[in-house]
Each structure stands twice: as C-alpha cells, then as structure tokens.
Image (cartoon, rainbow, N blue to C red):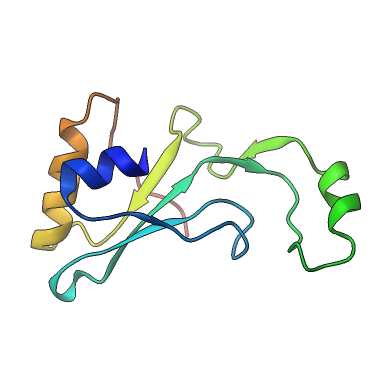
Length: 110
C-alpha cells in the first residue's frame, strides 16, 4: 500500500520499522510547512515489547492475536494522517482517492 500511495502522490513513504509503536510505520516528507504524512495499519499485534527486552519471546507468544487499533473503523486496513488542509496534504488526499482501493476520510480519536 505504501508503494502505491508513493507512486500516485510522488511523496515517498519509507518504512520506519515496528519498534516505536509495535506496528509498522511509514512516513513521507511533504514539502512546505506540511511536514510529514504517516501511514499505519489498523490491525496490529495485541502485545508489544521491544525486541531488546528479554521478555520479548514470552510476551510475543502470549499476545500473538491481532486486534484493531480503531475498532470503530473495522473496514479500514490502513490510516494515512497528514495536514490535509495544506497544498501538499490536499495533493496526497487526491492521489489516494484516485487509487483503485476503497478509501474514505475518517476522524480518529486522539
């Protein structure tokens, strides 16, 4: 999905790994004051312990099931967040809307 959005928008979404939040994070630098756009999955592993933690293997086995980060949006596989009120954010939004995947705007609770 990150590759498709990158190609359509011409903003390169790069993988940031999964050690910050426990799920894959992609980000793209947007021009101007827009700063960054982020893409994250909705369905993630329930438990999170960094690989450097000795308890990692046990916790990963105990919490191997998948859960939705935003249960109010079960039909959403990924979320793209950015300042969509800027020119760059608007361009990104329009590029996503043109992709052959269902997409819609949602408001995420903080």
